Amino acid sequence: MKTSHYSVDQWVAFSKGELRKEVYMEMEDHLYHCDHCLAIYSKLMIEDETVPPMSDDLAFTDQVMEKLSQMGRERKNSTGSEIQRKTYMKQTIIHYTIAAGLTILLMFSGAFEKLSAGVGEVHDTGFKQKESVTENLLNKTLSLLDSMKVHAKEAKTE
Ligand SMILES: [Zn+2]
Image (cartoon, rainbow, N blue to C red):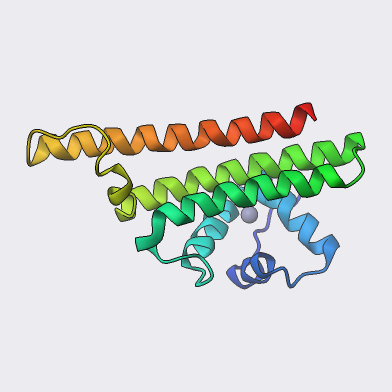
């Protein structure tokens, strides 16, 4: 079993698709098993300048969702062998994890604050309002993950 981690540079190359397929697959597999590298990769995805700016977080969420469904379509178009299906499911799980990680990081960065604005009514100010915002953020995260699950289910039953 591989115990060493990949470097940040390697993850940059990974995210840019600059790697040979075998290396890519190997790293992807590692990502699936390794929280440490998943954290590095998630961080890179946030810092990546190709990701829309934080102020555009609604569009960003849409983009994540779209990428996920695109991925499902691409996989469906290729041959539906059991191995490919398994690989797809695995990738989907990885992308859930990344999306969840991103959501949590975005929550901490306050980028989702705008998303939560207008969700529910906030009567109190100060600490209570903060609590309510956190609750809304949590609901947003859960509904985001729920919609992703629906995407996966659709892909699975096809
Ligand atoms: Zn690792």
